[in-house]
Length: 149
Image 1 (cartoon, rainbow, N blue to C red):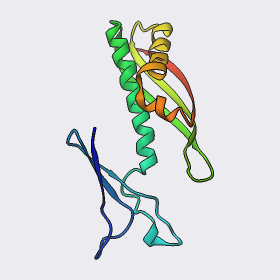
Image 2: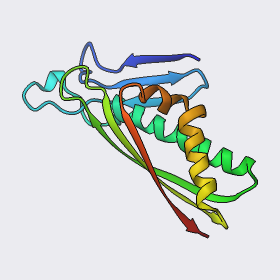
Image 3: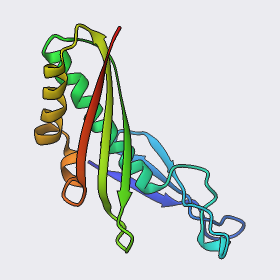
Image 4: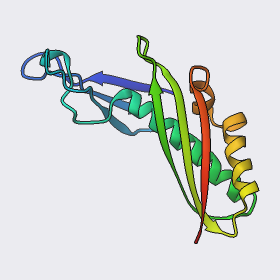
């Protein structure tokens, strides 16, 4: 896997803390920092997600992907899956994630609590590389709601 990240600021009129990532699969992702009111030249312009927000989104995307895939492989009629992540970070550098709660909303026809619980557990214990890696510094908790559609 490869990714090239380039700073979009620098010489001339360009400034700030914006970055563009070009992924090995050929996609582009913008990232930016928060504005710094005391030293604007050191801050971002709030034009894109922060890098740590992007990391958190990756954890959610990876796990939701697994949950849908596991339910589909089990021949469950899953029709939707979303996950809300709430994270806390360390106060001191490096400001790693210390806690993440993932609240899943899984919709479908006739989904059982046991099948959804199993899919979430398998994702976090075996398949989701992102949550397993971030789980080395963060206590990850999960919850879910099933919506009949």
